[in-house]
Image 1 (cartoon, rainbow, N blue to C red):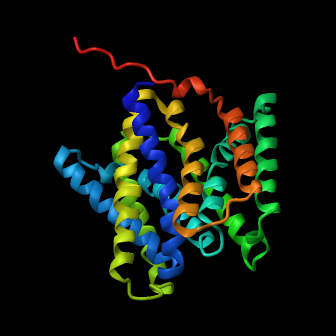
Image 2: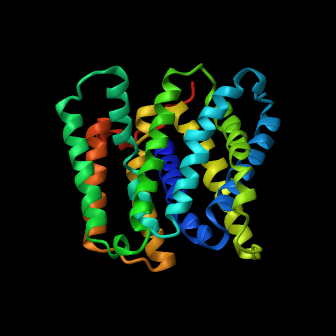
Length: 297
């Protein structure tokens, strides 16, 4: 991995880690549905502007069904579930539970292919389950009313990401930028009807509008551009190392901004979940080793 790619990876991890802080702050104030509708709509508008600038057509007539599937499982549904969970859980817990997505992915792949899981993967899954148990079993938040549903919602959101990832592997070939752009418009359409049932809880203050803009443009639109640039530069597997870094930033930002308590169980549970995810994905620290940029010919 080049130094430039490593820098992009760290920036992306910080942005996506920060998104859990913004969700934790915005969901109680606006409600999960308005917050996430604004997030995907702003991201769609931002990516539309980029597409116009780069002259990249969306080809929605050809791929609209594909965009709907990706938009549902990779954006609309998991965003909404995390928004609901953020009414109760801390930013740290949200970001750590998000890291279980590769664990779900391994189970889905094994079930789809009807193949037994290798020992390394089984060990990783066992560590992941133990890490989640350690994280929530010793946290006072888990004793609050509705915490069980919030934890289940977070795990379901991670499952949605795994479904989207496995679907994308077998779907029609669509370039990554078009996937991001089209799925954001699809997610906007899918979430829009829910606004009739769950309107904004209050008129947003200027500070809240800035938070929503950051969540939509920076944490979604810009983040997708960074992520797909990483995939193009270093490949899909090394780019997934962002999964291991997001909880670090999510926990740090929650502690720094919201003064969230970070107990031994948070650090230990997060570490065990990340270790299990690393086993499942075959992660190696060598993936993060920087190397010099190749000289131009």
